[in-house]
Length: 118
Figure 1: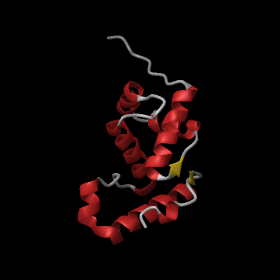
Figure 2: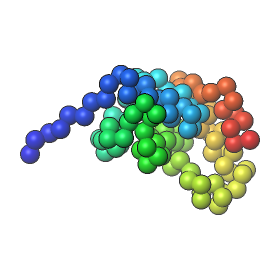
Figure 3: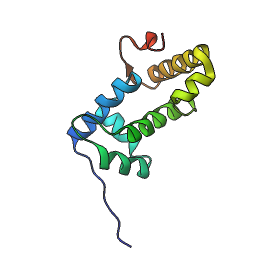
Figure 4: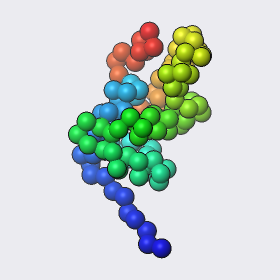
């Protein structure tokens, strides 16, 4: 069985980082994004097949957000249904933990990230 090498260009890593920054308010550099996504070959494959100038498709975006949430909070990224089930207070607690741990991990967040779950 032959091995397939999956490589994204620096530009594509940048597109993904920008897309995720807008999605979850955590700002990873292209290098940080590559390190995170490359840990999971299935995720890397998903991203590779869907990346473009506008970022990646929703499924891949959700998986990357899930990887970020898992790394920073030990939890999955909440879906819309999860937000409805957990209520605004619990959702805000999740998001505060995400932002706090992002800073501890050396990731930047957007200026309005603390108000994102508003």
